[in-house]
Length: 152
Image: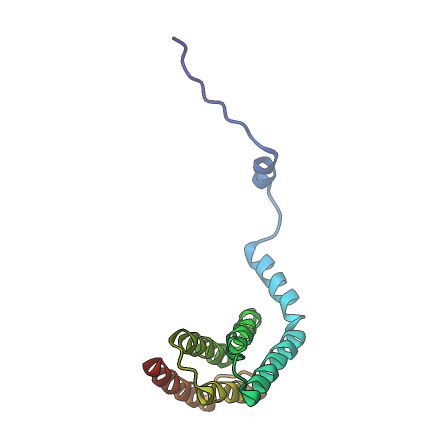
């Protein structure tokens, strides 16, 4: 009976990884953040557009447009997640949660959605900065969301 032999094969990638030099993780992260920051203005314009679309959907409050609320709010979250939008992200997440629960429970409440959208507009116009005003807005949204959860 022959004995099994183990061969170590060194791949090209392994040889390249073993060579000294290259970029540090901190440098790569810094460069990535710089490149991402170049898109901030465009992203904030896109977010403002999503909030405007939400305002139009809420103003119309047309039957059958309920799924648009979740779609627009989740799109806003997808975009806002790349940047530090603090309270805006929290308000958008709350709207997604409320819209999902209301739609699943069949008890849609447009005023609840309107309050969330108005809060997002205020937060956006304030530069998405966390302060006492946005803390109060988020606290109010939490209580509105809790009531909506009970109703759904």
